[in-house]
Image 1 (cartoon, rainbow, N blue to C red):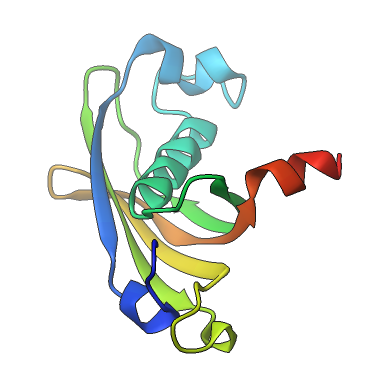
Image 2 (cartoon, rainbow, N blue to C red; image 1 turned 120 degrees about the vertical axis):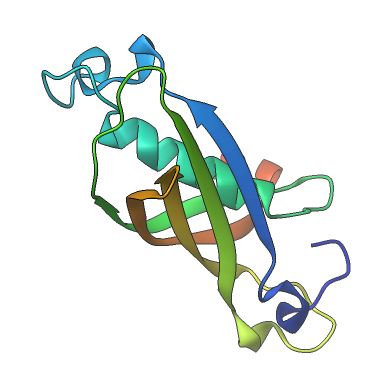
Length: 135
């Protein structure tokens, strides 16, 4: 996002590919008892794709603030899951030439042609040092 205003961010996207391992299963992460991709891991992968879509200046980072995710299909160990994230909203109140702080992404995860999950993630861009100093 270096130097980009909110309108330049719309449509920015990233895609990441993951292979389901035993450590990624619902059984392993405590979100169920089956050896299939756990929903918390799917969410983490979706958030990783949103972060990959951003080009933040040094000292800035983004934090997740809202998630709506549907986990629609099971993915076994060894399956390849492709996750994509696209900016669909960038806070227009940032004004021309200013960086948008609030960003919404649509996310989608697929195992081949099968839709594994879809949803929306909201992130807010923050100054990392200032954010941590408030804790």
